[in-house]
Amino acid sequence: MATSRVGRVGIIGGGVGGCSAAKTISNALGSAVEVTLFEIGRGPGGRSATRRTREFPGLHINHGAPTAQIVTEEGRKAIEAAGGEEVKGGHGTLNSSTGEFQEKEEGGWLFVGEGGVMGNLAASLIEGTGANVKTKYNSMVRGLERVRGLERAANGDDGYWILRNGAGEILGEADWLVVAGSGVAHPRWTATFGNEPPLVEAAKALGDSQLDSSLKAIASQRASPVIAVFFVLSGSEAQRWLDLPFKVAKIEGNEVLGKVMIQRTGEEGNEVAVVLHSSRAFAETNKGVYGSTSSAKRVGGAKSDKGKEDELNAMMLEALAKIPQIPEVPMTCKYGPVLHRWGNAFVVGEGLSRENSMCRNAKVAFCGDYVETDAPLSSIECALLAGKQTGEAIVKEIKGGA
Image 1 (cartoon, rainbow, N blue to C red):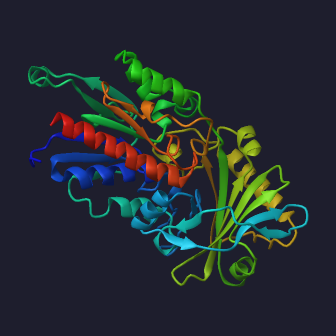
Image 2 (image 1 turned 90 degrees about the horizontal axis):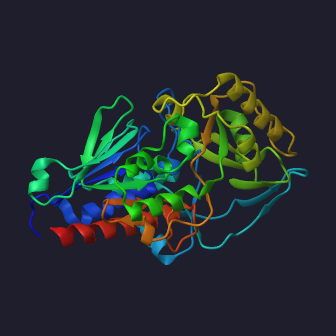
Image 3 (image 1 turned 45 degrees about the vertical axis):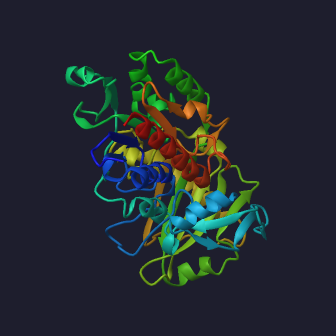
């Protein structure tokens, strides 16, 4: 294939799905294509991102997905290629009334990112892809438009996408648009950021039946939101948590809490990060709080009530304190407690079909944990495989049109 550039691909979302798509396209087309990742966060990862802080450089907290459950051979090969490390033991259920932990095997394999850092999965996917993959972090796409310039039209080009930020400034241009994460295409966008979802608004001017069908299917999907609260302890306080018999426990019989996770962290690995995930019911009851340090608040401008945030922190910690055998959380932690809302994660409903994941006329493709693959919907594995299959489909389209 000729080395002249034949396409530009803009990927909205730098999670595992978006990075998987970027790697697939880059590996197949090399310098013939320019791929740009637009990510609202400070780095890659999405729900598998790892929280860090400049104040304590050695800390890392997997506050979204503590592990990735893999159930297919294809997924296992893909996650191992991304530097994933298999982990065993310490996963099960915790009885909220008795504090009894019961270890359970859920089938398949459990993986973490290299060094136990989940964010390394997405990062490793785009490492070594070369100069043709560019990243734009802290970038929120709030406007989309498909245009057809006169010069391009004269050459038979059917148009390209313009991506804009909240101020209307151009973030980038792309011949193909990949939506890695349904945020810009789902009605829940409006409740968080106020305006119409950017892709929904752009689709009105296109009149593309395939894209309209895809957007309708995405709109029917629901999210199962989670509020996360996490903190870091050191010394003897950390050891009490490390002595518990579990690493990840689903909490049974609790109206407030759904899961508790314990992770070694710190430069010497002798500190502990404790991550709480709320129940779905608790998160749905307490909407409109995103976390003052979240990307939705920091970059997207989503409103979040700090007073309400502190109240929810206290409620979740109080629910934790009522579980027998759980160590007391001190009044002062090394870091935290910090609250974060995962509002666009954990998809419920039918996955976007493979057919609807590619809109060839509009040059829009979808990937992420909401797209149909051979892996369970809403899983890290699903995002990983969806990125690969969408990337392969775009490669085929670009090669066919080159």
